[in-house]
Amino acid sequence: MAYVAVLDADVLHPYISVDLLVRLAERRLFRPAWTEEILREVRESLIRRGLEAARVDRRLQAMRDNFPEAMTGQVGRYLAVIPEEVDEGDRHVAAAALAARADAIVTRNISDFAPEELFALGIEVQSLDVFLLNQWTLDADVVLDVLGEMERDRIRSPRTLEEWLNALEPLAPTFAASVRSRSTEAR
Image (cartoon, rainbow, N blue to C red):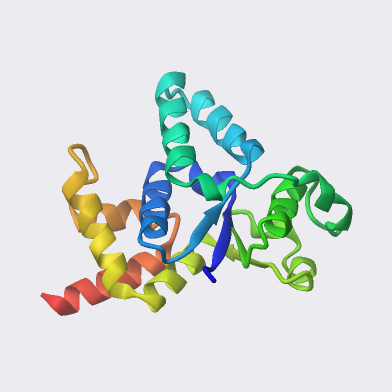
């Protein structure tokens, strides 16, 4: 059975992290999960930051089309068991994790999720950095392949592996350092 991770809106918002996460999921390192509400949050955030709505909609539709199994429904029936310590605005994400039978929630706002309480329900709350580092530990070669693919596919900056790592560093510093260390050793 695949490792299932609910991807919170805040890790689906930055292009660099969503591109990496989606490509890792395509390689079956994990199975992503999200809800329409999470994708709506991503859409609203990207449009608020000035991205064209049609472009955002194409991106989100591609995610829906490429990962139909990621869409999680019946979230409402799990809201009652979510610990009250979970931030009101994130309760739907925790409920989605239960509905998807997820192993983890990947987020940049760990403190909003009351990690200890959710762990008692069988859900680990992980930062993007920890999650990517776990993927790296599981299969560094696949992660390097994905980063190489990202490097080849880009026509605008970031283009090189070093530029990708520099862009990822604020979001996932330990992961970026680990990849940088290995790629330096390989030279």
